[in-house]
Amino acid sequence: METRAPYVLIGSFVLAAILAVFGFVYWLNNTGGIGPRTSYHVQFQGPVPGLLVGAGVLFNGIRVGEVTQLGLAPDNPRFVNATISVASTTPVRADSRVGLDFQGLTGVPVVTLEGGVIVTKSGETPTPTLIAEAGAGQSMTQAARDALRRVDTVLEDNSGPLKDTIANLKTFSDGLARNTGKIDGILAGLEKMTGGGTPAQKVTYDLRTPQNLGPAGKTLSTSLAIPEPTAVAMLQTQRMLFAPGGDNPGFADFLWADSIPKLVQARLIDSFENYDIAHAPLRTADLGQADYQLLIDIRRFRIATEGEARVEIGLSARIVDKNGKVIASRLLDTSEKLDKVEPAAAVVAFDVAFTRIAKELIGWTVQAV
Image 1 (tube, rainbow, N blue to C red):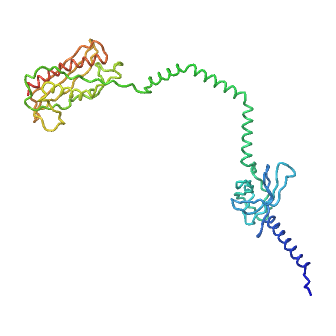
Image 2: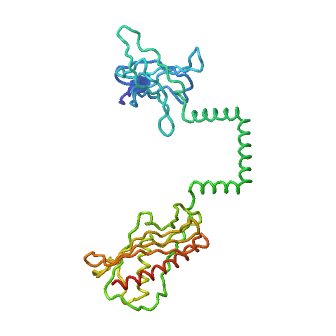
Image 3: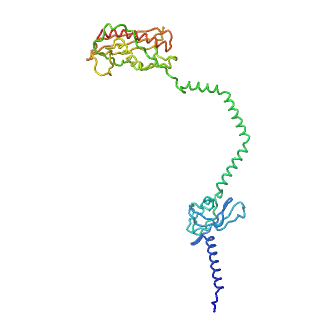
């Protein structure tokens, strides 16, 4: 005897289970799941592309509910009315800001809620309809389109002035091209006037050492040192000096090979060596202590332009022993006529004048020590 299967009971149970699942899903999507919920009306003042029933609602970035209803505003087709269901504990206020955000790579839209401080007092009506900010539903793509549309409108409205401006720029550019040489000359003049640009290369001149000082009739029998000559601050320079004071434009690029005191010291030592190399004087920086020192003070080393142009060299010389006692002193002055006030001619005149004064100084020093 076969057992009679309860097909009707089994079918009814399966159908009831399916209906229960569908009911739970519907309840979850439309009421937001478990826990007390509160519904709010939201009005968007523009399109809400991609927003669907069931889309999430975020408060300060946290999901608190879902969109339960969408529809057009009957009094203004441009507005969109939405109903959202959120957890009752969500601090939605009358002044909470409402917007639309697009999440993920696909740009899924969600309703966003932020802030709000106005609290509904007891006895008052519930929170009124929340008004979204203008353009809240505008995506980045739409915003870019609107911006480009506005730019296009501005360009179209100002097409005439823009064409004139471009034409003027072309005219100006053509004028610059035609006058490039003149502009370069003007800029070069400005650089020269203000001291800018690449500085001019300085030309260095040396003082020639006397060669023919005659036979050494008498030589230095004791050691002699020549320290660096002393001079006033004005003479501590490599520039050519003029009297009366001032500069000569023709000597703007002129430089002595060293400062005047150091140059005179070096050439005097060279002159003593040419006179008697075996008993040449030393510098004070050399090792050992000399028996005597030849102290030089430079008084003049310049070009005089008053009256007949000439170069002038004036020295005061003193010979002191190891104890600092002056055993001899002398003033030496000389000048040489200058045919033309220019660097090359001036250096030749200084060479002649220095040769004369070096011979006189050597002869006097040899006799004194």
